Image 1 (cartoon, helix red, strand yellow):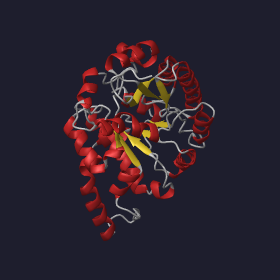
Image 2 (cartoon, one colour; image 1 turned 135 degrees about the vertical axis):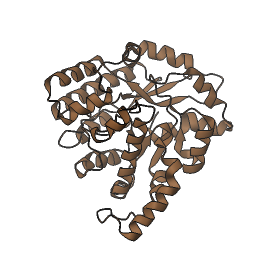
Image 3 (tube, rainbow, N blue to C red; image 1 turned 120 degrees about the horizontal axis):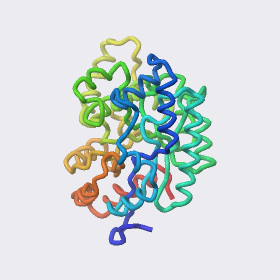
Length: 347
């Protein structure tokens, strides 16, 4: 049932962070037991901006408190949230710990969805450090638990998932017909210092640079040629890639024509064509009319859908701001409900 009876559509928010207390415990345990040069240790320290691994209590409470989440959804006029294990998720953890956390998180999320089937759907956490890059857990979560895709919290122990050993995961996502949500993480250790030196490593800039880089790496690696039906969803209006799209095409073409990088193989299409055919974009954290309308123009209105970025940017007024964009009722239906329903196979 819609919480907005005057609207002929549901507002579905598709990048909404969720957590469980065990996650914070395993992070603390990891930071005390593993050597400081371990890539997962460095990844966690990077995510917490060289801090102690703690998050503000208001954020932790919102991540784990379902009743409060529903009350705040109602206050903002959000009908449905698609939940996903908050960043960095399982990514910093070795295979055993990552597998355990994925399974516990997915089981718990499925229980919450079953208790509130009209309010929540969910994306599966995946142990990317497992030998099959999490493919079997994704299959279990989709087939047995009814989850609606996978969450990929960007770099995995400082590694990007265009590496060949992640292909099993992407093959599984394509075969299952579910999307992969590429969500920000802290910049990898190689990138972190110049951002952190000026306090730019988080949402202000570092997250976007890191995630945009990851998506562009996937494109030029040829991932969509290997898996042409693979669907990627990216938030924050594409982490600036729609703005750079024409320049990326131009410079990529020049580099291929001149053979500047012998190890970079030519794609069958321009990079922008993959952005327009295999990638969907959400408004998480970017609720401004001009930016949204620009991205709709660049990639196609049918590829841009609503998200809030709860609990990190819980601003109820932003819902009304997007409600007031110059769109027809049909366009608003697609923006708030229709696209998400199709991409995430929602009922």
